[in-house]
Image (cartoon, rainbow, N blue to C red; front, side):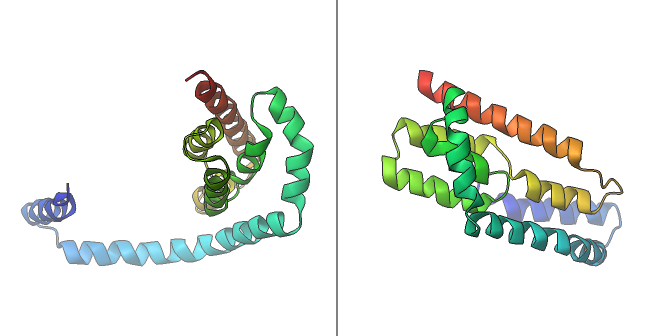
Length: 167
C-alpha cells in the first residue's frame, strides 16, 4: 500500500509519454486553471466558517440543542447527540470536537459513542459542500438541494441511532 502513490505517478508518467503529452506542462496548466477557481470560492468558504463560529459563540447552538432535544429523543436520537446532529451540517472540525467530547464523557464503547461515530461518518457538512460545489456553478438557488441534503442527513442520524441500539 505504501507504494501505491509512487506507482501511480510512474504509470501516469509512462502513459503520458506514450500519448506524447508533457506531464509537467499539463500539471502546470491544471494548477493555472485551479487558482481562479480557488479564488472564486474563497468568499463562500470564509462566510461558512464565520457563520459556523457565530452559530457556536452566539449561543444559538445551545438554544437549538435544548429546544430540539425532546423532539429528537422522540425520534430515537439521545439528547447527548443533539449537538452533534446540529453542528455536523455546518462544521466537520466542530463536529469532530463534539465527537471527541462524547468519547471522553461516555467512553468509546458506549451506545452514545457508537451512535455518534455512525452519525459522524454517515452525515455530511452540507453547507461547506454546498459552498464549494455550487460556487463554481451557474446555479445559485441552493434552497432545494440544501433542504434535501439536510433531510437526508437527519434521516441518516435517526437510522444510525436505531441501528446502534439493535446491534
